[in-house]
Image (cartoon, rainbow, N blue to C red; front, side, top):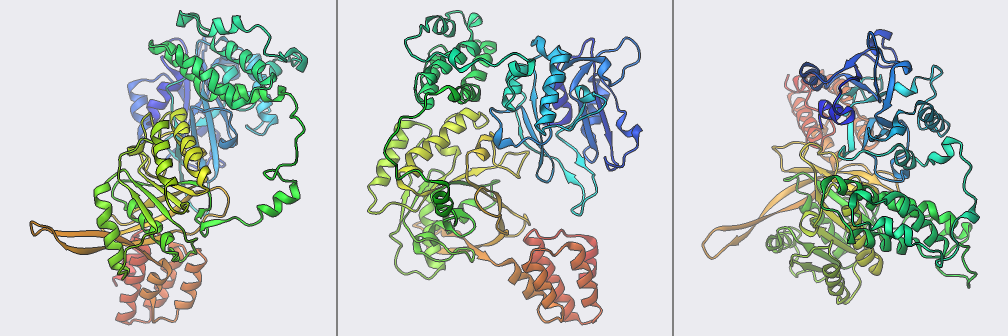
Length: 634
């Protein structure tokens, strides 16, 4: 997503109105007032070209469209309509729906935006929008503006830099989610942030007694409106809202309500693209949000005997005091996670190495594991996994094959309920429940749209309910990255939201046979340090045509030990060891150390520096900067 594409989606076709942008290189906190002035955005070819070239600047756009009789200006007085409902500090995991985009604008800080439908008259109601923004201020989602200019506030563009001064330097913006194909009403957008527009308008909340208490209430009219033969005449929002509220109030389980209403919607799924967009918006998280909101009207639960599955707070605290790990600090026990990486980053080799260590009970990457059976779904490259396992046995000196790992090479679609039940039956046939199930890869076991939150959510929920929960095992899904965003898994942000942990695999040096494993998400623990793996080639023999048979095997390589081996023999080894073990060594600090060591003027020491820096560079801990390498080659 380029900045020009983003702005075209936000503002649409600008006829008698204009947007607004500004770009500058200085620290936003110290920038001159003139830097924030900006200019009117008309979407001219020159503007489109220029905004895409400013990748190193702070790039901002105005969330509103404006109109002026004379000279254009960005002011609440020229406000015409709100194009984006934007929050600065909302928690992505707390949203009640799928926003249009989530940008990480500085480490751990996010801007979350929802594109608004220009056909919705309420996006032009300045007083109403003012009240919505005041509620967002009260909930710490945006900062208060004494001048009242939040109507025309700035938001970050997806491509650019945050040049605010910080010890880690300039921060390049990251797009965690960006799907600008749908636009929402102001009511639906506010609801995603947990704001009820009726309350914002000042209307009294409906008393609980107004909600139907019995399924004997006549719902014929709501059903008629939902399944109207003319798609253009259907009322999705109101009908679903009333039906979900009354069904939950009557005691129907919320999950059953969602399934029933989705079945009704699937029966009348429209073919027209415009009507399908309306239908799709309600089918996914909007429906879940409606049902979730209606849960406050549910009847109180009946008194039952104490359950072994529930806890008092003190009991829960004790039960959860210590996180249980399958791989200490990396893979929680009884969890859902992912290993992702671009093609050629050796992610499947690393996943297999972890699986084999768990199957044998050996420590993996210097981390303790729980021994147990492993079930490996080799949906991608099933024929080659036998060679990989054989090579792993050979390189680890194992004469007898491990019988604690079961391999499935049959193509299986885990997004299909019938096929995932076949897989579950096969796992149940194991003599002992698995500790780990590996699915390699998502793309080969999934039918649907990877960018659809509902498709991906259903896929993960099926694996969770049919594989993880019945066996109490951990599940790892192997997945790819996108072409434009190599730092995160490809597809919908629902992937990140629905998993307990995510591990990324990268190649610090494209020319070297090494891979770095880093923690991208760890829900229940601290992020562990990165781990480095060398890929070793093992020759297994020759086939019937005399061609060589071989396979790669991933072997853990301690980053600190590699670097120290290079620096070995100098009086600075202790301090370097301290910096590396504590993870606080920076490139600048290593330059200083190298300068001091070079002064000893010993060729062997300079060679050691080169080896140490090379090890650190391949591990991705430092960059090949002229200052460092010039010293090492002196």
